[in-house]
Image (cartoon, rainbow, N blue to C red; front, side, top):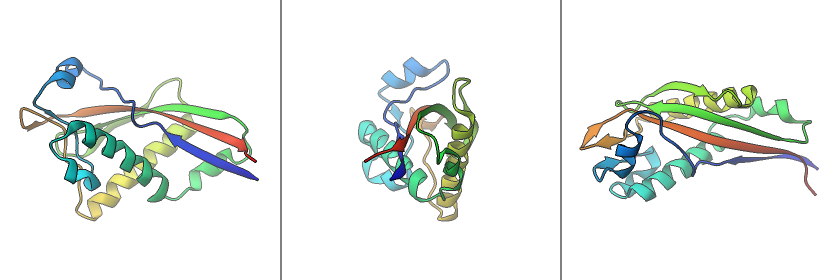
Length: 153
């Protein structure tokens, strides 16, 4: 039986910009809050884990799977890195992918992220942006993604 196994590796992320070291080590840094993770406010590690776990789940379940038909007959691994910013208002900006990324996979995942954001916005459940010293900041996330395709018995 041929099927697709999608593995989104969201626990390893990196920040871009001049303030990376300052933000990571700042005691006043607050991780962005995913709409389904508000109960973890105040605990950055739990917020980060919840953020990526729920984003991964939503990307697989809230959005149709039309784009992934492209890979139906592949027996290989695809890798990509998607990049996006959660701005000071909790909106998405600067969506992109790295040069070494699989272009189709990257574009599909970025479309899924946009659709997921729109879904929550329509439900009036927005992302709470990251903060430093209580002030919202732009927060850029890079997510490495690996997908394996092929026969599994």
